[in-house]
Image 1 (cartoon, rainbow over the protein chains, first blue to last red):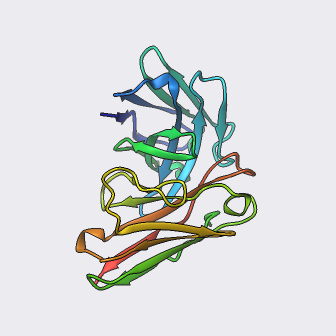
Image 2 (image 1 turned 45 degrees about the vertical axis):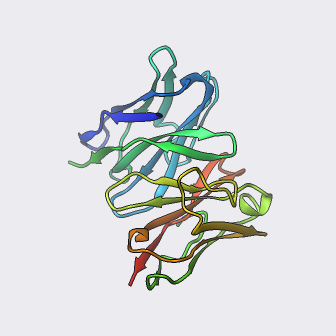
Length: 118
Length: 111
């Protein structure tokens, strides 16, 4: 069974940094693109970033490019999202997802809540 | 402002059929990229409902069906049940974003 478990969220002041983690199990982690998707309170889903299986290709939404860095450790089956210069509008639940080549996300973690506030 | 446009809400009585539209542009649906649909029950993570425009993952009832044409797509839910009350999101790839784009979500209310 595919499992994705995020952690690392919390309350952080504007301008601060936070690193999210997502531990994957139940599949060959290095074979898949992985994504981060966020959801502000009461709002819709927004794609944040993606990374390919070997970690060499990364892409970001315009709203986070230059501030967020996605990475992965295939030896530990872990996906990361390093977030810097956090702003109030970065607040939300961050989901890690497994990407499928057809362009969809077939498995989602339960999410971790990031709250950026003073 | 989401790249894909969905109606904010739809409703229907138990047993009825409802459809949810998803309108895109020439850089996503219109470019031939597939549409996928997700169901999000309150307080839970999204769940894949339809992939590749029309395909259902194992375990998804055939009451759910997808279609697309040109720069728009639709999700149809027939035989509405109370448990279908949820938020529904469409998703596609966008060549200008070089990543996924989602619709703003549609809240389905079962009357």
